[in-house]
Image (cartoon, rainbow, N blue to C red):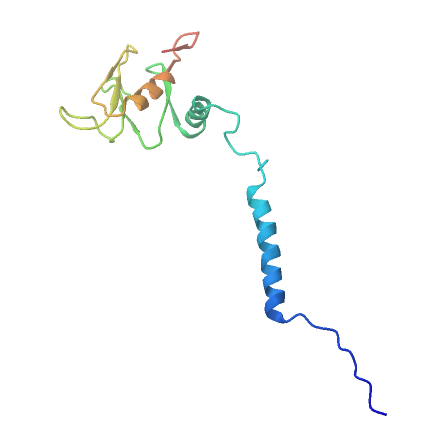
Length: 144
């Protein structure tokens, strides 16, 4: 009697198996990319002015001078010069007082708490610095 032929189960060839695996991975990946993200991100729910104010509060340096009676915040890449009886406080973007015709921004604060704005390119930064001024020599703190 001749031997009975044995039926072997068909095996999926490796190239077809790899293609099926790639298609499934692509489908899963596309669902992950296009689903809505519910991850809380910094700034969500805050308007741009609130973010700007928080940046000033958290990342700007604070200068305090009891002799002149002032306190203010300024960007870390700016400089505060002077602050003695002879030399007024100069807040400068260049690290030195600006000369006539030079580019740079500065605010000069005098001992009587008056101030003057020197040459400037970025009025927005000057306004931000001025918005943080507090007079500390009186019993009540005033803001300009």
